[in-house]
Image 1: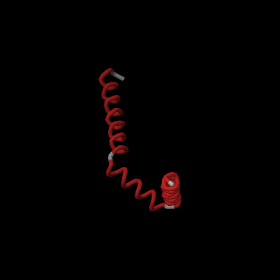
Image 2 (image 1 turned 120 degrees about the vertical axis):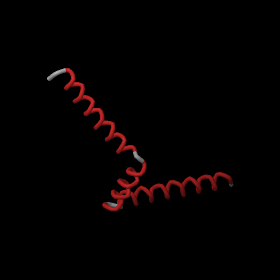
Image 3 (image 1 turned 90 degrees about the horizontal axis):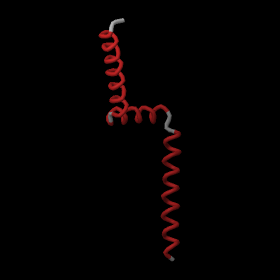
Length: 68
């Protein structure tokens, strides 16, 4: 391979890598992927939400009882 073909190949690899990074951090695509994952299997998301509710309720209860 010539030096120019090496440079062209590396430039193409870098372009693809940057496009993939951009795709992964794009907020709209991230939201779409998350929605798709929730639609596929909502159980872990529901368990996480329930855990957050329990944690917040426990914190509120602790703060209310601590004031007495």
